[in-house]
Length: 279
Image (cartoon, rainbow, N blue to C red; front, side, top):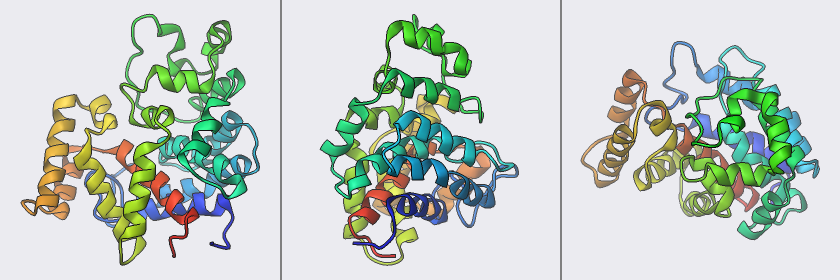
């Protein structure tokens, strides 16, 4: 077992995730965008630490997440790790007693409250997050309303788990919340079974996850057709028909960012670190 604390492993997972390269379309240690750079992600991981500490100390999930996002946003690049923190916060809470399993984290998310949901909505006031318009009937619960949506949350008695469940069919992170973090735990096994530098393993796992399902952040920012193209081409990398480096150069040029896949890699790195992945 690592001598690092739960919060240290969560912070390290954020740092290792952005260090992996190539991660086609995402910022990594060799590629960045003009307005979103590697250094912003490093600073975001440092700023998020107080919220991760709160989660690991068994503070309520929503306020811990809001604290993490507020700290993450204290750099000039904007939103670097909102989704990754939404993955890591319940995982860190579940790992607080050093027992981390799908059933542990499933229990944590099912125990969330309306107050946790309110804190989640307030977190959107700290940073701009790319989201789709809400489904019909859920306009009063548009996350872009921030705290203005809280009265409606309370009227409907929606917990944070309920909020996640309402978007699980269109958001890959929300889908993890309702599935016991199925893909995160599976990817953590791939990391543990791999060899070589951990950041390189993270890059490999990123490609495997990208090939398995369309990235919902690409669906939101571009469209499903683009997300399915990216999925096919990630599979082509696994098949040896394309290279991840070529894809990385092209996707940055086209502003195609598989952000949800990166969020899942961060979660998988944390689970693997908690389960003995050596760094």
